[in-house]
Length: 309
Image 1 (cartoon, helix red, strand yellow):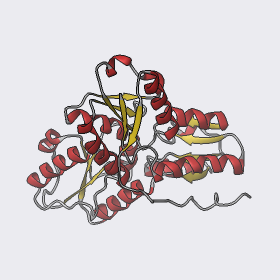
Image 2 (cartoon, rainbow, N blue to C red):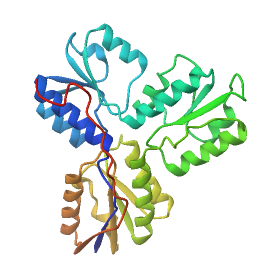
Image 3 (cartoon, rainbow, N blue to C red):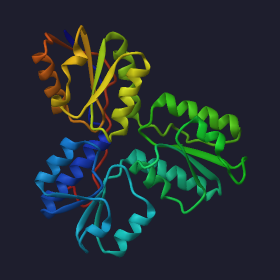
Image 4 (cartoon, one colour):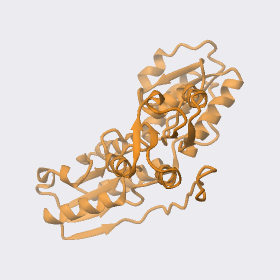
């Protein structure tokens, strides 16, 4: 049995930055450092930071006045930002710069008095944070069917933005439906779906036809990891998601000669290596990494975390 590795896979620049922000805050200010929501959607990462002194909360009411808090990579609403300011919290914002770009685009369109349609998954923290950038004039669609039910004030004055971790193909289908319904709709100058999401989905599209089964390393609540599994499955290849090597089921591999492995943007490479070792125990004899895009993106840390106090 051969293991074929997708390339690129795993951590992106936004995830690297978010984790480093929490680690630097712990170094500089000491534990506890509070983090609103999981810093990224990966159980291994969250548990590792918790062991170092990070305290994960869902509401700022759980954070003592004056404490240091980190906003997760998914971004937060204006209301959360105001609450943090009122309570005198020392905030470090780990929102991915590519999510911030969506917020800026949304603000520009609302300033033009356009209603904005967000393409995304209801309940996802990135969607909640983005929808919360405006007190009105926002609509959420999750699929093409939702587009037909949209009711807007002025169909000639509409714009759209997207969640950064969507399926590229699914998002394109929804944008096409929006353009048919609202021919004058305005979108971002550059696609909102982040470079890492696009690259990892493209890598799976290249890998999947060469394999008999695909394993995606990622936590169940990771949107981009779920999309990778869907991309492979939509190409007719059996695909499964695992949080770690212990989730691997030997039955998935029965009779398979080539196993594809990739990882979501919030999954560390150490988990991929553990999956490969477990696959060796199940009979894998070789590992081959496919050629792929080289990612050289790097996002700077917020001011205040560059050097120790």
